[in-house]
Length: 184
Image 1 (cartoon, rainbow, N blue to C red):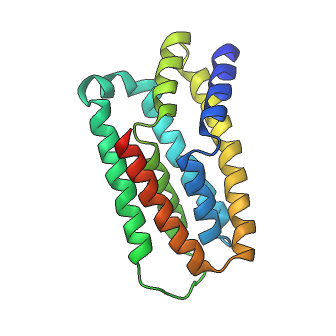
Image 2 (cartoon, rainbow, N blue to C red):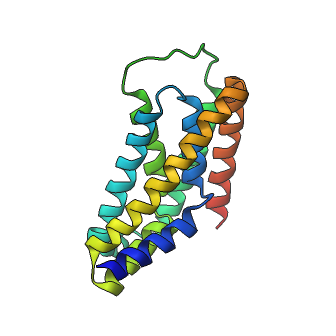
């Protein structure tokens, strides 16, 4: 188990550092800087669901849905999210006690990770080591550490930069990610 855990942790940590999902966590941490626990919970729940699918059902999904279709879907989701963020009407930032930060981070992270290299890596590691539990645990430890750091960095940025600039930059970043993913 420890061999798969260490391999998954190492591979996921290196490949996810600075990846689009980490940028998404940073931007969400900035946007919801006073609700960072909900952002973290949403992001980690998305990662857990996606890694579960990758290590348990990944071979079935890849057998029936071609990787290029997953990439196109992910690209269009990024572009759509970027345009939505960029074109959304300016509103005063209100801190509410609803589940919006959780749902926003869950959906954004889930969309950004569909068909991502870390899912493919988790499938390969789980089948290579024949240890889905160790693979899942290693991948989740890596994502938990990286996502926590990204959200913390987003909170720091939000204290120094006006929210409308964060909104515009995040919209542009998501459109760029979508276009880059589509061109891969």
